[in-house]
Length: 370
Image (cartoon, rainbow, N blue to C red; front, side, top):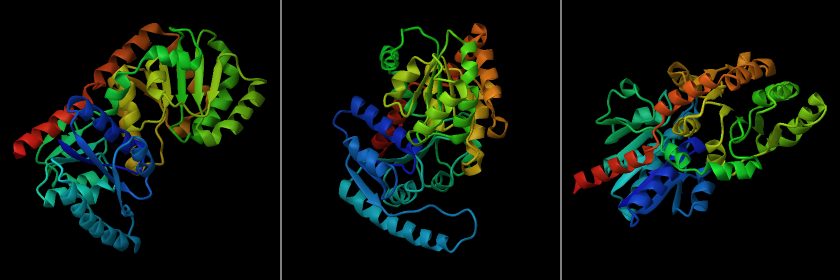
């Protein structure tokens, strides 16, 4: 197969695409790839580092309010379509897959106009503007959450695949996770993460609850601050608790997150779709603190999906305090039956074969075309 991928802006759109590449290369080793992304997005650095050929187009997203900038966006979109058509004609892909972000717009639209089979993958429980637009042109819309079908009334074909990041994490080795953290296998671990760049509200709550951690002596807390927050947060925790609590590790970043997740007993995190796919593939109970600074408040909808299934507790940012967070952590970590029920519910939502399902659909579309 010859496959073009597009997705960008944030890791939540890029990592699922990279998971598809890995799965496709595993099932069809002869596959050739081309990734078309934005000039300034995170994909412009992550994709070449992964050894995947990369081409960039100049594209920006629409402003949701009336703005003269939207006129420029339309012009960039049309130019992006033209550039994408040239790239697609040169590469001659069998299928094109878009994993979200406005850069997918001109690429998948161009594929449609050239008669190339295409798939769009929607990570969130509330669809993005670009995917809603593309749903009428793509051959298949792939969903991360069940029950989203009504969000795409113009779609030709809809399938539920889950998020392909789930496959990457499901295969992780937990013993390497324990080794990375310097802990004995079987140690109960509460992992607190504010996202790849950190989150000030979670940092503040972690600082406040640092003196309380001694109440859970058997638990080890791993707090990933984000690199920019690391030093000031570490010093603030030491000042608040008198020293760094014995059961707490503070880290700026974790480079092997799948392996660390594999040995985690409970996670405290934002509610980005890719991360939720990862934790449900492993059946990790969670306390979710949705970011309020996202389009359509989609993280809260993502989080409520897990909460309604019994897999997570949700604390909104306006109600987040160190005391509230620790109370929730303590309640779960001292109740084994609660941990088991949350883990079971989380695993039911997981789709560890997600990447395979997407590759299977890609192959189906290429065979249908021949």
